[in-house]
Length: 634
Image (cartoon, rainbow, N blue to C red; front, top):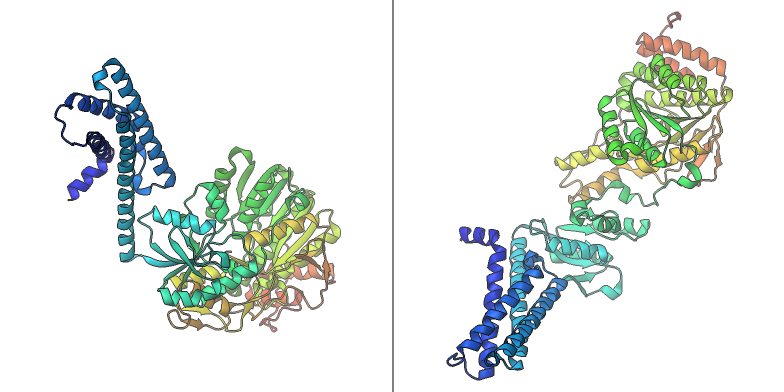
């Protein structure tokens, strides 16, 4: 049997051709016999075999010219069957014409026109039936195979997306799903069928239908839908404790030629935020980057690399990617080469923002117009145990970069800050608050527009809790949450970068821009939803463990200091925090002591000095530690 299957696979075209030949020969014999009222060929051998020869030549030539055997009939659709019918009728016309010419040359070979009509109908019918039976057989084989080991699938949305998914699933025997039902809120579509799958109910009935029909996976296929409705439906799906998947931007997939099923993915946290995504208005805010030389520090990181992507799309004169970690820098370099090729002028500089001599060299050899400063140590627990490194990199790396930018007359300098800088309870947040103060100080005395942009947690960024949750769910748990009441603001990386670019365009110098992060999200609820949408029950299939707040961590983050007020901008998502007054000379004096303590790796005095610079820093300090004398260093 296996050898026969292999023989058919390798010689499918030849076998199908001879099957067709048998059918058109049979139809000719039956048509000839019906006309004679006798299926014996006695006395009619010459006209019969002459007609048979002309017919075989006619049909063979036409069918080969129509390339019928290049098609995979197991995947044939209505258009393919129509094409086969046209080929059969054309072959009959050629056959009839050939026999008329033969009959004119030898009258004894002439045939009655009824034979041609009967043969045309019968041969077309036989050929079509053969293909229909062949197609149905393959469908039944795939369905039988599917029912043995595949997941029962519910499709949400009875539109073009669902039709494309169903069509592709039917043509891909190796897929892992068997579509069972569809749900849609359009009442006109209820109880109708799409590609053989019935629309069983509305999205409100999802839990009931899942239990009734034994659904194992839910696939969300609706593209044109409001964010609120999308969140409502996904929340309903989460109640089923089944695995929920989604196809993003179905229209783009359909027009790109990429297989729809290859883009099926897990539901992400951004699908559950329940607000409209933020986009960058290139026409209004992007002009200050177009045709300019732009430097991005930390360009290989999550925020920095997205800055590079969006800046590259704006058409800068030259893009400089600066990063100390060569692997990340290499990744974004290769991505930009693949996407833009020679259309984008850019380079990668492996350097630290601590290295002022290297920064001087870069700024001296390039006429840099805009700087986006994303390089920083950001991991809160690590900076708690290494406060001197947070100071060296975040505070004095920023100061050196800002001084060089001022010296070489950079037009715009945008500092990436964080909501952890507000009333900081950890070293990382406190150092970022000092960076904001440096930006305000430089903005007062420099012609460069120094600004800071403050926002909260970024989904998918390095250090984000979401990748950790996903990995913990994948390995069976437990999912670790520091505290049941902890809340955070969330924004996607492209959203955050879009607002950073926008803020840079409206900078006048010294501002701290604050991004509207929407409503805060409770981390416990976020973890539970991720568990549900991965197909598990929280606290049963996947445990949630509360580990306690980490060093320097607080229950909620703030975007404003108590002393700050906010000023609205033209962009509804961006506000300007009212600057807090401080003495520049006193700040510089404290920075000298802080620099010296950090260079000596004196952690106790580093933390104490940070607290003196940032009065709102609530952190354990060593009040009794004595400061060593300051020594001049180059």
